[in-house]
Image (cartoon, rainbow, N blue to C red; front, top):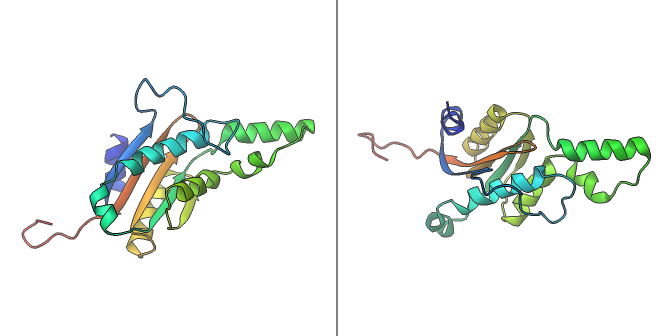
Length: 175
């Protein structure tokens, strides 16, 4: 089963509006630099997948009505390279810069994405994709967000989907 079909089955009551990954092609060798994030590729990869996904959403409907967009990050391990760098610095007594302090948790890149794209919904960080999809569906169903950017990120890959509530079916099966 593909990641896309998993997303479509797991996010009951939602529709995939846009989707992106890192990497998507052989050209995706090095993620673009992300100001304020150092040492690791985790946050740049996550931000790039999110940017690709958000840039693919339908702009005509978005311009007509502003939306509240939640950002949900799912990562089983988080930013391993930053965590290892911080642990080494602590073990050896090396100085630890402030950039590493805030980027040592996946929430940091979620906040960056929200600020960069002017997203005003809740920010959530969980450990697995199923929990992220459940959170997205609940935030949309409860009215806390009109849509949710669900980003599954690990150290070397990221998958982003933008979800919205599935439009109700009209009688006769047409929306």
